[in-house]
Image (tube, rainbow, N blue to C red; front, top):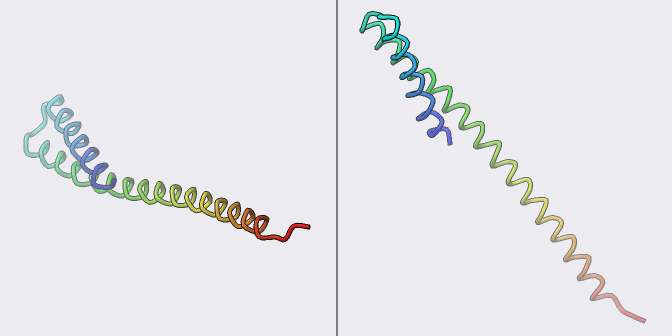
Length: 88
């Protein structure tokens, strides 16, 4: 997920920097340098945010699955005890 966020935020920042530079009639070298810096900085930020989001999502899913399995095991163990208990 980090690569996806980096692939979106980096080029988006570059395009915004290019449009801004062209709209103010800036020097082409300065515009390209600013756009490239924005590309790398925002790609790095997107990668970090994407990685954090992926880990958070995986932990939440794992926690829910563990809870469901635990409740299922408790239910099955309770049912097994009642079936195996002697009746009078």
